[in-house]
Image 1 (cartoon, rainbow, N blue to C red):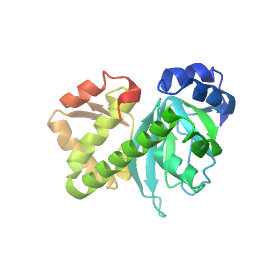
Image 2: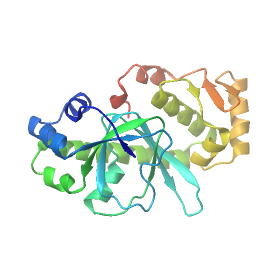
Image 3: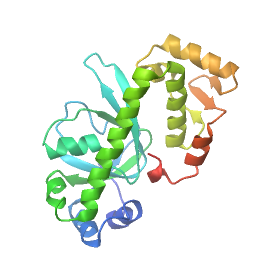
Image 4: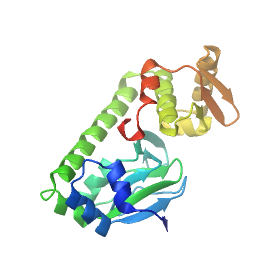
Length: 232
């Protein structure tokens, strides 16, 4: 990690407009602006959680991983958000249960772990931000469970492609078939066959190390017109 230039106060005001003035000033005093390069590891499973990153620019992909390095995609984090799982680990002074990797160069205002509990009774906007983060991520995790339990792999694949297109603000998805298979807990062969079927249906166009999403559901078209921080 390396320090990033910029004005913490203005970044917080722009990305977390709900925060109270006194809270913004405390974040300015206590926070450190950190640049996480694309594909670098922000958080790993088993890592001690001693900081709270507030995303102010970029996109972060969050995974769960088992002991055999099998991964499953959970959700994306955008500017104006923090990872609820990290907040929970921070509150308990525990260890990370997730892996977080930036899809692009990502900047975060990083705060000391001690501020999580200290600010809960002190600032109403912080309290609601933490509670809303818990609720939003809980709902995202329920969607993952529902998808695994009740939905066919082709539906999961289309939803994955849509979410990735929204996160990157591009219909051209750079993930490899092997990476997609890993994140959906499937095999490259299954993903390859499904992509070929989707290509025949005119939904995607597959080329080397790139998948172009040609047809989008109506809801995706609406989502892509919204600011990034409101997309989850």
